[in-house]
Amino acid sequence: MTSSRSLLALAATAILSLGAAACGSDDEDTTAGASTPSTTTEQTTATTENGTTETTPPADKGDVIRVKGGEPDGGVAKLSLKSGDDAKITVESDQEANLHLHGYDIEKVAKPGAPAVFEFKADAQGIFEIEVEDTGVQIAGVEVR
Image (cartoon, rainbow, N blue to C red; front, side):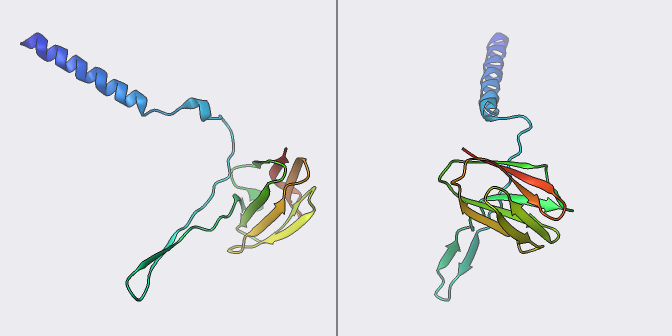
């Protein structure tokens, strides 16, 4: 009887180990040191007078870059677009910042609570900088291929 319990315990341990291994991450899609801009999504739900619930989908901010103290939060963002894409890049800043997307010559101003939104057709190929114009600090590199 003791050997039956030992065998059962061994089998249970093996099954649990296999289950835990299956829940691990797939390292093939992981790139060490890569910087990916985060995207904030907020969904709004409201109840109408007749009791029905309406849900407003989150606004599409595109790629989001955060600037804190005049510097890119988390380092210079690396963005990649395909030629012909409709691009949308949102820059949120904790202080007023004059921003410039080189190559497309688009200038925007970001303020606390009022992000700058760059919307453009990615039709020029190359690598282009977005910088804080007043200080020359690069906050993003935008590759269009």
